[in-house]
Each structure stands twice: as C-alpha cells, then as structure tokens.
Image (cartoon, rainbow, N blue to C red; front, side, top):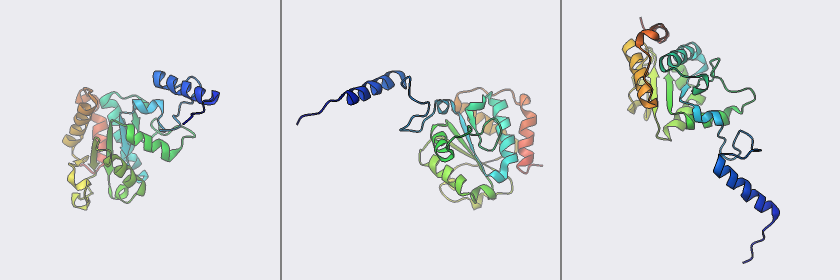
Length: 200
C-alpha cells in the first residue's frame, strides 16, 4: 500500500514533534486543543466544590487554606470567590472539568444546598471516578445519615468543630507535601470557618 506524503502532513508531524519536545509549539495557543489542559492547571493544588448558596463558607474556607498552606491565587480554585474565580471568557464547563481532573486535592463542602445542586453532584462524581484525593467536609446541620454511597463510605469532617478544621489543614498539608503555618497564624480564619459551619 502506498502512503501519500504531502508537505502538510510533514509539517503536522514536525509540529507534533516540537510539541512532544517542548510541551507546546511556539504558535500553539495556551489552551491545548485536544485535552483542554491549560498551563495554570498544572499549578492547581486544591479545588473547592460548593453550592453558590454557601458562598460565605466557601470564601472563609478558601481564605483559611490560602493562609494556612501559603497558597498562591492560581493554586486554589473556588469559582464563587474573588481571586480564585475562572478567567474572563473561560469556557465554564470545560475549565471546571479540567480543574477537577488536575487538582491535587478536591475539597467538597457538603450542605443541604450542595447536595441538591446538580453541578456539585457532577463535580463530586467526576472526581470520585478518578480515584484521586477527595476530602468531604460538612456543616453541623447536615446529618451524616443524609449521605448516600459512595459519599457515606468516606470520612466526612465537621467544619463546625475546630479540631476537625485543624485536621483538614494538616491532611491537606500532607497530601500537598507542604508544612502548614503554625495554628496561631490562621486561628482567626479557622474560627470564622467553624462559626459559619454552625459551631458555637
């Protein structure tokens, strides 16, 4: 069988070889057209999944994690929180899907609102299917008996309990190979998380 070789096919192979050697060609756009991966996705450490109805808690938790683990803005994705939102003009579904796949740790804020949110459930399902670190946390008003498999098979930390907020910080530090700041450095942020989660 004869294979027709054209200048176009040689050029395509040349570009492919350059991409394999250097990550991407000089004229290739920053978004990979085949995988949807973006350069900043490689830096993403934590994805915080939440319902828009829990924005105050999501904001407080994001602030806590940034302070406690010394994260840069691009290292945490929380789509409702300034500084951690999607870029202007980003394809929402595609970007979130790529972020869920690339984040080293996935923190899911479980509340009655988030369990009723199709988007949160899709995010949880996408992450669970990867068999990669998924850390569920809850508010005090969510009864653990409301959770169904596979979530009910995971240990869920209660953010209303200060000791469990501290555990979340240390668990994430271990997963990300980062030593957290001393607890007193983020004590105020941790207390706000617990308060918003229903702690006394």
